[in-house]
Image 1 (cartoon, one colour):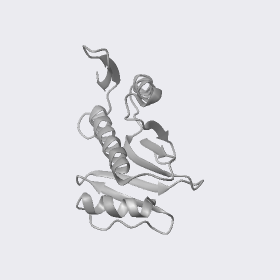
Image 2: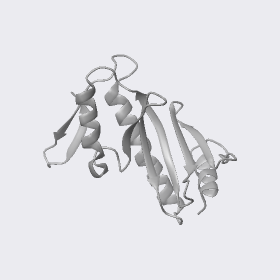
Image 3: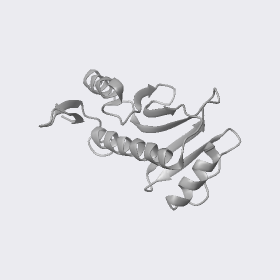
Image 4: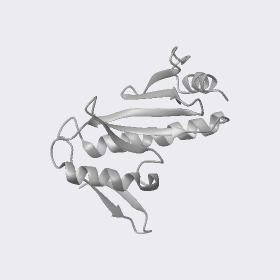
Length: 152
């Protein structure tokens, strides 16, 4: 399915109405009233990119926070397949995911969006930007040995 069709169906399914791509091939959607997610056709024309701001770049304990972000990025184990990075021009920590499939079913697209927004929620919670400022993130293993990430 083409990105424009995927976005239209996603908007209708999520109660967002008709979501149309802008002239530049992208769209911004707001999920649950607070999660702003940008979706745009990839510059090379193969697939699309999903991005969202997580929080301002932390000014305290950067070493610990950035180490946690790098661990989470390792094969996407703590990001649902997305990647955490810094956009220094905007002063933000950004979560992004590139989908390089020309042919994606709506169910596959919806699954990608669910994983992405879950990771975005988790990382916003881990940073706790609004009330306490960013905190370092640490990896922990549960009883089954799976790594999960959260605030110290």
